[in-house]
Image 1 (cartoon, helix red, strand yellow):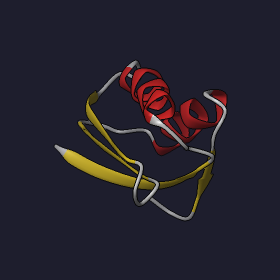
Image 2 (cartoon, one colour; image 1 turned 60 degrees about the vertical axis):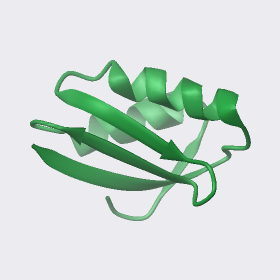
Image 3 (tube, helix red, strand yellow; image 1 turned 120 degrees about the vertical axis):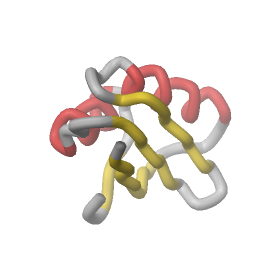
Image 4 (cartoon, one colour; image 1 turned 90 degrees about the vertical axis):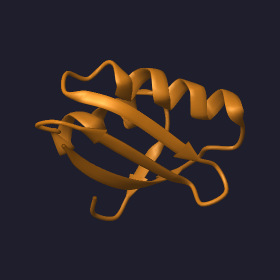
Length: 69
């Protein structure tokens, strides 16, 4: 199992966290998504994680991604 962490911009509430969790959880290989609104961090656990797909899902959900995983 691997873990990747992302800094996300534009999150302001629990609805934002739920939306990101739903979008990223739909990616094959993702087993858990944890969103921390206090630090604007999204932590993704799973097997064979695809960084590009995760970033794309976050952007398609309407949020920005900064920095490296």
